[in-house]
Image 1 (cartoon, rainbow, N blue to C red):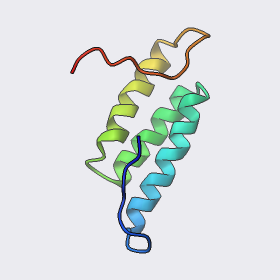
Image 2: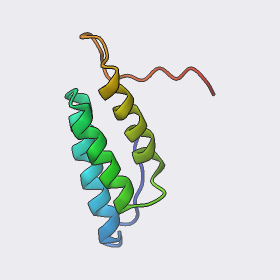
Image 3: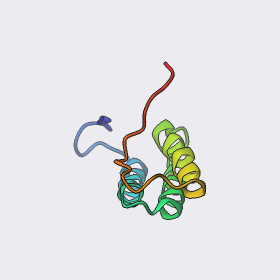
Image 4: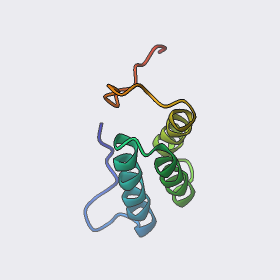
Length: 82
């Protein structure tokens, strides 16, 4: 899933900073570094209040840090409700 941030050259620096933090957190998440990922998602959400993706991924990373997934975890999150 991609999110459009705005026209090239017209995106606020805070939005770009939040994007960079989020992308680093996402890399940590898929590397199974859930505590680091949670810290990154928390920072991204703080940089850009109202970022629903950062808030959602923060909750997932915190849960996976507490209850690690099995070794064959692919990173896919099964959506069970609409």
